[in-house]
Length: 518
Image 1 (spheres, rainbow, N blue to C red):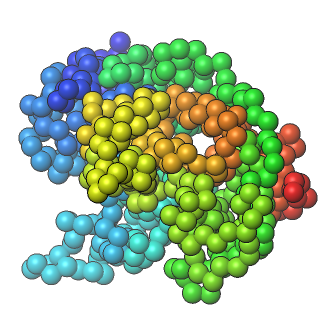
Image 2 (image 1 turned 135 degrees about the vertical axis):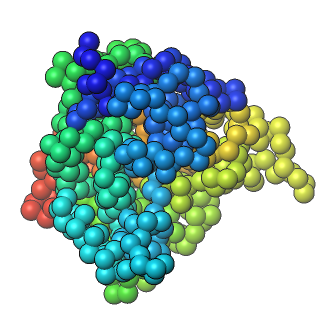
């Protein structure tokens, strides 16, 4: 064992309880100075709770055990996030905490703006912001308004904000969940640069492969306790997964027994204009079909029109739509989510917080909301039927919660996603569109979602899977439609698809012959 002064953080026997839930049990993790320490585990394993303790969200008297920082015990008082930052501990949360209508510079220096006699020095603020962005090669304007940035760029701004605090310990919670491959490469470069400067990073991710790119050691949590800590060079993907889920997983993508049947949904020459940018066509002349019992994957780079395409089909996007949608062979007009549901089409949206959930309402109300007609009687809702249906679906999807009456925002990100999937499964769709269904979900929960997709397809449900993860697209799809700049670059069978081919199509370097089945 190294001497204590080798560790910038030494977490010792930490236990944290909430009403009815033990979040952490006797957790001990030493973190060496100047290293990148990975922490992984399934949803509900305790990762976020531990990080909030380190970042001062939970005060020292709310948990048992102690945390040493540079050899001295951390004793944060209540509302002590600023105290943690002053100590040099900064955290970038998975859920963005930026002010949308403020500029990049205003967000980065919010609460600590350079000023003279109480007057903000805007030139200095933007000059210093530009310095931070330049140091880490971040190509974002300091005067850009955050709401005009993509989700990936907003994540980069969050990281820049933490770096501007001169952090000695930087905690990153799912930092790549919304980043493009190019942005991931930028982040990896930033972390390598920080390591060279002696900054310690704690890196939390569900993407296990990322640990092998950047970390020095990996700690695995399960059910609130430490399973073990390994040097990254001594670990393997299979060993980490086995430690996370408590069992050996022999396959990453379960093999289904799907037998695609007749075409149920057909899209012909669909085009739509952006409602946010005048003159921009988000989807251009796209045609495809999907069969009963088939999983059709939709791949493409961020901004390629994937989400715009499926949200248009669901009746909730765009202006000046043209083209034709056929459902079970008959033309349909879908101008709202309600009309889509009436036609047997459901959509699990990409952004669960903004479009999929009412976060200040209960799990029960969120799950039943689109399905109230099932439980409605004369001037009232059959509460017993509602509760029974929701409990059955929560059990089916293994949603971890002490009660369906708990607020959705009390759940982990993965369990929130399960609530979104549950409410749309309750509508018994014939076509289920899943837009990034496993974003922010741990590997064990992903496997359960994949098994669910296979089960639904085997029962005849047509599934459209939108994903930015090419291994997921290749592992789960029967055919793959690739989008490029709003257009269909081609449709290929899984047997003919490779990551290299799909990426070449997504970047416009390769146009594949469309293998459509009518």
